[in-house]
Image 1 (cartoon, rainbow, N blue to C red):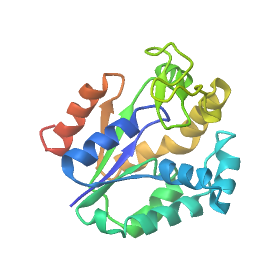
Image 2 (image 1 turned 135 degrees about the vertical axis):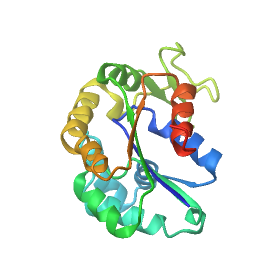
Image 3 (image 1 turned 135 degrees about the horizontal axis):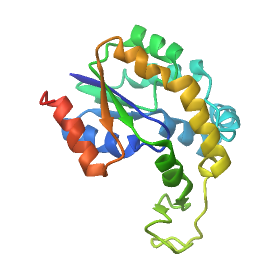
Image 4 (image 1 turned 90 degrees about the horizontal axis):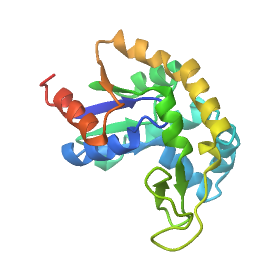
Length: 208
């Protein structure tokens, strides 16, 4: 059983690392962001409610997110463990999670804010689901389907700054919260995806 929380500011690379960790250790990757985006895409009442906060770079209310996680960790694919990506984001969420389940590792991916702003601001999306970055892809049309690329509202510079400000105020205190429990490990997220993953594997395999 391996129950992991992945912490880090928006754009720190949590999603990329979560996918690799889940595949290597055979555990469920639970992304509250994906769950919320699915609701937004499907136009559910929850999705409409969540979108009003996300578009402003604000956090979705705790009770909504906690409910999603509580249901998700009861599903069959979590029997060997799970990795939480994007949750908890506040101390109250962490306290609520502590009542639902034990946590084995809390990995904090630490990245400079200037690098994060460049990463997020350069992202371009396609309606088919493909994503690109202007640093490595110069066209404004999708290589896969030919549709025009767009920038998500929450990837625009002013929203990125708001998201980082919200993170610093509400989410960064989680680092101290989990440090006090002795379960927190900091990983340098300024390196390449593979280098960051190698550092995380050392932690999870007990070699760090």
